[in-house]
Figure 1 (cartoon, one colour):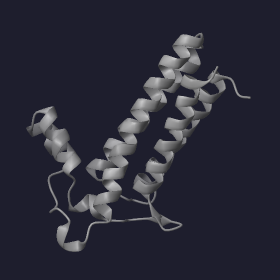
Figure 2 (spheres, rainbow, N blue to C red; figure 1 turned 30 degrees about the vertical axis):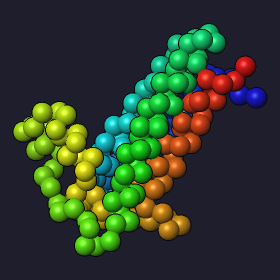
Figure 3 (spheres, rainbow, N blue to C red; figure 1 turned 180 degrees about the horizontal axis):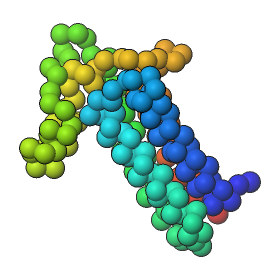
Length: 160
């Protein structure tokens, strides 16, 4: 059986791989990320940082549970953002929201709470499916990855 430190390291490597793949899509395949994609990357980074801290700290049983709980909670928030994105991609054409301003514009011109609310509402660009594998879009794969990270992190919470 893997130790909690090993599980956290595997999770960290998984997050790093997700971010590397996202970078490949953006800089090599030239797929521009929408605001929800960027938000999913931020939460992937958050989960990865929590897991890396757990690996470097190598804590005892109680702190392992704290790190696992935090990483699992952040991964579930990321999963909810991905689920929202998948939902937007599966709306009928006539119900897709119109395209809105870019994320940088929102962050520069609106309070943070308003900008996050606008991002979560989504826009027409978030409804576009630019790439699929086995019939699943990037946000669908990201949703599955966040759920896997949540399970991996929560194993540390509930193990003896």
